[in-house]
Amino acid sequence: MNYKDLIERLNNAAGGPAGRKMCQDAAKAITDLLIRAEKAERERDAAVFDLLRAEEAAEETNVLLDVEVHPACDYSLYLAVHDSVSDIVNWEHDDVWRGHKEEKE
Image (cartoon, rainbow, N blue to C red; front, side, top):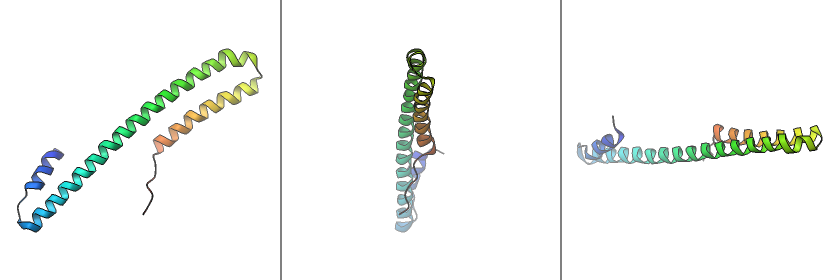
């Protein structure tokens, strides 16, 4: 069933003032949940886009490290910088995929 149709049916439900009020409250709750879901989807999409950009930047940085830094410096320094770039991207992934926990009130 379409949520918008359900909301409309709840808003128009008969059954006296108490039943009508309950249906209106249910319709409002569903509407509020849909708004929150749409916002969460937009935030998720933005986070995924940012992660993809971070991965691209990390790949470009790793290529630069391989071509320019590796031949000119000690391997252990090169490896440390390379690992740091990877750790940054992995940390970003963990934060987004794991999500933020809501604090209990």
